[in-house]
Length: 456
Image 1 (tube, rainbow, N blue to C red):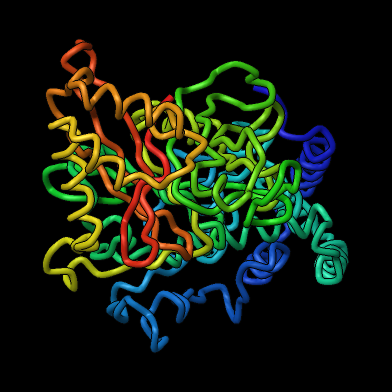
Image 2 (image 1 turned 180 degrees about the vertical axis):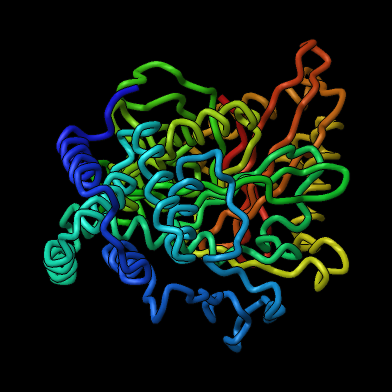
């Protein structure tokens, strides 16, 4: 098994030799050690070795605008008692924090040492391991100097970036979504959508939801990294991650040295982005490049990056072309018990869509023409030239369809009312059904289609 770090290994060996010569280990102030390690990452302030972390007010319902009621005090998650998946590198790291907080320094050291041997490219784990080695050596002054330097470090300093990563990973532990809550966009999700992904960029977290006969449930969440300059992508090369509703494309496994274990392209820019003049290319969900387990929270050129183990699992779970990815600055969680029935779609949209569906089945060219915005430039069925050609053929009853199945309707996540419809069209002339997507928007009280095309 490879050594986690040659310099740290040599220090560990020197300390072990010194202890063997002395015949006993130098006693440690466990509470001070816990404060040193957790203080070094700036994640938690310790008054003693046992300090519980309460859910912040943003998730506790204390805000007047909060959509979540206050959790029961007995169920409030805390660092010491939260259940952790100890099989993942992130879980092992957080278990190290838990052990330190309980005063179990020996077990904490053994666990983080095991972790850096298992995952030597996990920089945050290496930082904790190094801090513990210094503390165990009795070099308290060195640890104090490290803490002092950390306090004045620039936000771009590698240690500062690691502390930010640690804060976000620990926040994901103590700011868990209530079990009786879902993001508001997940209510009313069509049963045909098996999985949905939501990204909360403010928390550096990706949430994977499963949709079954029992309803929508959160099945996994993962730490992520986003663009170096945050969100709100506008142009190529601006190093920002776009916000909006997108869909995963076909899995790409080439260029593993750059994209890690797997990659799922997003359909950015989508038709809403194009309409708004936003550009850029190659925004993907992908794994970590060789030599890195994880990056700091804002460190990509715009892609959303997960660790390779998390990305591999994600790519093996979701359905290409049909799984939505909602990228948001902040997710708003709503109690399931407060929603008696799925939210209804806009009545005007439902009426317009029903008109379109019936007109398409009848090949009613005159009605269809009224439901498409004029002068469209894109879309295999809705660009101006192609639309006129198709409408002329429908007028002659030359483009019959056997069925039109609406699979999902999702909001566009922008100020203008936009709805994204994914549907399956079964043509009488083709044995294979075609997966298609429409973008509708409301203007002056009327819903019309500004894009309609086959999903690539």
